[in-house]
Image 1 (cartoon, rainbow, N blue to C red):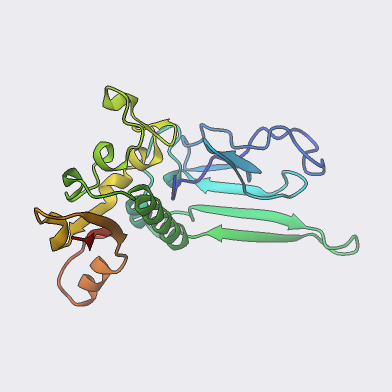
Image 2 (cartoon, rainbow, N blue to C red):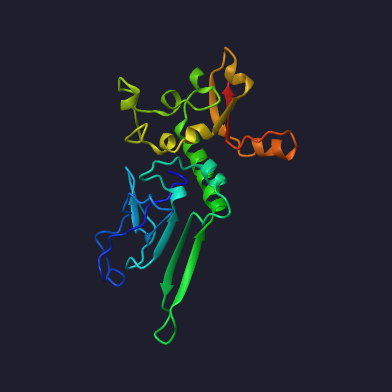
Length: 238
């Protein structure tokens, strides 16, 4: 899920750095028992509906080190923007990538190090979650969705044919194992409602992401320290 980085690839075969392709080029969980997990940058990861490629280099020669603060296997940490905010400066970067580039046979190998900072990871994760939530909730508002958090079973779940919550599926995954619940993103949501959306005669409302609502309150000195993602139900028709 957003903000959650994969385990390194640790089972690449000998000679993979020069091989045109490798058969074992994905992440190798579990890897969260130590402070830092080290290995190679996975060539790809698999989602339920697609494969996402990290790189297309001819071999697994890109080093990858990742902090256990941003992986949840096997310790099942909640990886979200709050965890990223709580990481102290004494801790290492969430991840860093290093690869060697041999520009010519007459030159020394050049090592490139690419850091993944907390701020960049947190900003990207928040945008990704906000986009997913607003895309997921594209239907007329129901009363149960007007609380402080988005109730997953009431607002987010499309496959509601199952008889119990434990069997509800989200994107083909049991909802308790889905990244939105597993990483506690539902606790990082603040929802408000425009007047038209709570009136008895409302017709249609749509969920809108408001990225600056809490930030504006902090800037004006109101004392609002709520750092959750802000959404509002806005009336489209009456």
